[in-house]
Image 1 (cartoon, rainbow, N blue to C red):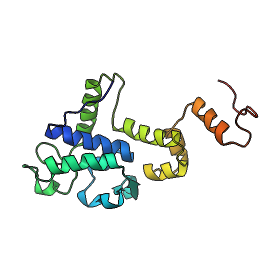
Image 2 (image 1 turned 90 degrees about the horizontal axis):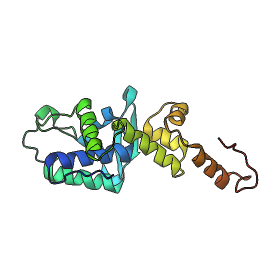
Image 3 (image 1 turned 30 degrees about the vertical axis):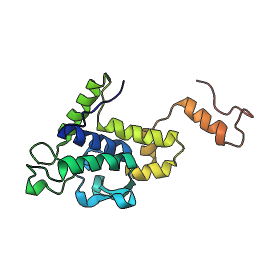
Image 4 (image 1 turned 60 degrees about the vertical axis):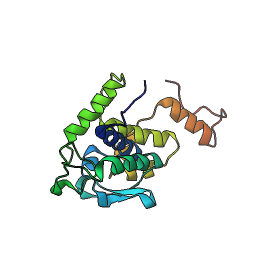
Length: 189
């Protein structure tokens, strides 16, 4: 199954950019809908996010997300015909030129997943979870992932990014001094 978004439509360009931001940065849906233009620092490859408790954090952003933001900005957002002045500072707008709601983002992701043939329940948090899990599976430091997610407790990050036992066994064998078949420290389940 592949996710195909129609890039020839206004909504398609916006939706692709939103998905890229959610996955590339591990943002909460509330952080995405409240993201403002003055929080984008693409020349330095990061964005500034205001999270829970009004805490600010800097998150690196990758080339793909920046590229799709550029398409959205140039072809839709920059000269949105109906942009409402009180909503002009927000990055992602709906058809009527207003800030998107949480529910709208949930519906967009649900509909895209359904169109891709994904039967499981998928939402913005799924992309946040995938962001963290993929970083950890790739060898990222747990504390760095904690910072990027905006978790105040490392315990939250550990629970949030559960890894399968097989992956943990592989990491142990590769990096522990007694690994690589020398001693089996992790029981089979």
